[in-house]
Length: 167
Image (cartoon, rainbow, N blue to C red; front, side):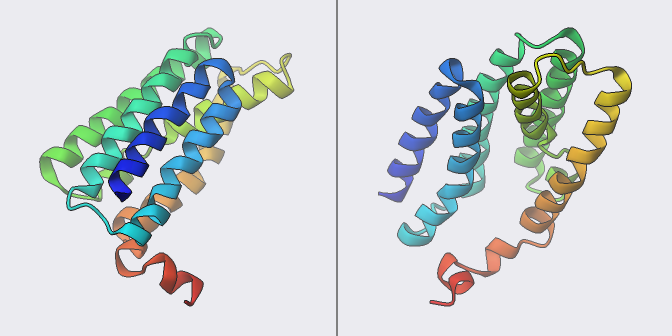
């Protein structure tokens, strides 16, 4: 039952991205994290990582389609970051080595959310090469920490939601 709930939500929610990119992207980001809550209640499927990566690629592909509307530099960066993550996801599937996800972090998602938010809040803000490099460096720090905690340190492999909440 948990798998059905997660799959339905993670397939439906990203469709909002086409109409309201920032809201849809934020909701897809939350839905990606929320599947852990659902699986903590209903139990994890045996192929959780494979399912999660497939659902990630689904909503990231929708974001990539929307990224085609970006200015040339942010669009090119988005495409490169998406490709980098796809390479990492494929290598992860082939090797099963979770450290691969640290080397190929999903920086695309944070970049995409940043560009969409900047376009909405500051449409006059131009992402020059220098600004782009700076923002990518800033966004990389929390993303690497996130990937490390999840895939190298494997914190969520050792604790359930109930452990974290002290229940």
